[in-house]
Length: 577
Image (cartoon, rainbow, N blue to C red):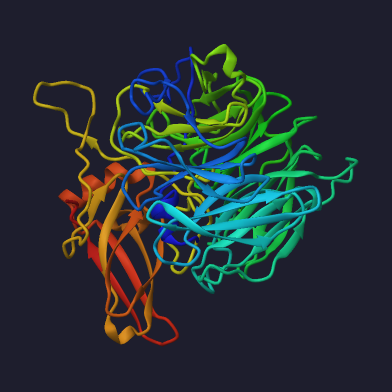
C-alpha cells in the first residue's frame, strides 16, 4: 500500500466512481441529469480555461500546498515545466497557475512524498525515441524545487506511484511504461528522495499479432486482493491490456492479458470496482473506436475472457479515463477526455458493470475561433468547490491551457476527497486482513447526507464541513471531506520512530473495513495528526454509527518500533465531531 501521506495530499482519497447518462433514465441513477460547466476562472468574470505552459500532456489533482482544498499540476512538454494551480475552495484558483522547472518532452505527472517530509512532491515522466526518465520536484507547501532525474526505459510515456514492497517498507516506489522498450520499469524508493536501480519487466508477446506491443498507459490496483499492488498496462500495438501481479518484494511476477477488440488502439486505463463485487475491474479508453471497454475481474484477480463490454463515449478520440461517482448515487461512473472531440464524456454506471448513454461536454464551450482546437489529452477528478461532487480538470495541449469543469449535477450530498488522475480505491476488499496492503490510486469519499430540514424539504442537505484543528482532541475522530482525522502518539521508548498502520472497522459486520489503510511513520515522542480516508459507500454509516453506537465503529492502530521489538495495538471508539 502506498504511503498514507500520498492519500492525504496527493489524491488522498480518490473519488468514488460511477457513470452518467444523458437522455436516459436509469434505476441506479440519482435524481437530476449530469451537468458540467467551465469554471468562472480568475477573476470570476472570465469563463475560460487557465493558461499553462506549452503543450500540456498530463494532469493530476491533489493537496499540493497541504491545505484542505483541491489543487492541480499540469506537465508541459513544450516548455519543460510544470504548472501548479492552487484551488481556492470555491471552484476557481487563488491565482493563475505558476510554472516550476521540469524536464523536456514530458509525458505524465503523479504525486507522492518521496523524501518523507510530509510535503507533496511531483514526479514527471519524459522521454524520446532513445531515452527515458522520471524527474522529481520536491514540494514545500505549494512551491517546488530540486529537480532530480532518474533513468527509465526508452520513450517513458507515463508514471504511477505505489508501495510495491509493503511488507518491507512504506516508501513510495515508481512504475513507468516505456513504449520503445515494450516494458514496464520499476524503481523502489529509499524514502530519502533516492531510488534503487531500475528493474524492467517485458510486456508479453501476443502470438497472433505482428509488430511490437507499444505500451501506452498504466494503472495500479490490488486485483488479487493479496495486499500487494498489481499493475495494468495497455498496449496500442496489440490492442490489449496486461495485468502484472506484484510479487511483494518490489517486482512484477506472473501476468495475464486480454484483448480490447479489433484495432481499438487503447490509450487510457483506470481501475475500480464497477460491479460491486469488491474486486477492482479494468476500464480502457479505445481511441480508434470511440469507446470504452469494461473488463470485470473475479475474486482471484483474473479478468473475464473475451473483449469485455464496449460502450460508446459519444465523441472522437478518447485518450484517458477516470472513475468517480459523479451523480452521488453510490455507483461508479466514468469520464473520458476526447482529444479529437475537444470534450469530456461522462457515462453513468448502473453498479453492475454496465453504463448508460454518454453525456458530452466541451472543454471550452465559447472559445474564440482564433483559439483553435483544444485537443484535450488527459484529465483528473477532484472536488474543487467543496459541494461533494467530483469536478474535472483537462490538459488541453492544442491551446496550452487547462479546463476546470465544475460538476453541477443535481443536489450535492457532502464534500468529497481529492483524487489522482486515474487511480480509484486500490484495495476494495471489504475484509480487514492484518498487516500491510496497498496499491496506488486514491479513493475519494463522500461526506454524510444531512438530515431533512424543519421545513419538511425532501432534498438532502450537506453537513457543514469544518476543517480539523492542528491538534485533534484525544479520542475524537474529526470527520472532514470524507476523511477521519485522528491524533497519533509515538511513545519515547519506541525510538527512533514508530511504524503505524491504521484503519476503520465495523464491529457489527464481522470487522468489515470502512476505510483505506493508513501507513505512516512518526518520530518517537511526537504526536501528529493523520487522516484515514473513508470509503465512499460507507461514509454515511461511519458518521451515523459513530454518533449513535460509539462502540460499533472503531479505529484500530498498530504501532511497531523501527529496528526494535516493541509493538502496541490500540482501539479507539470514534466520536465524530
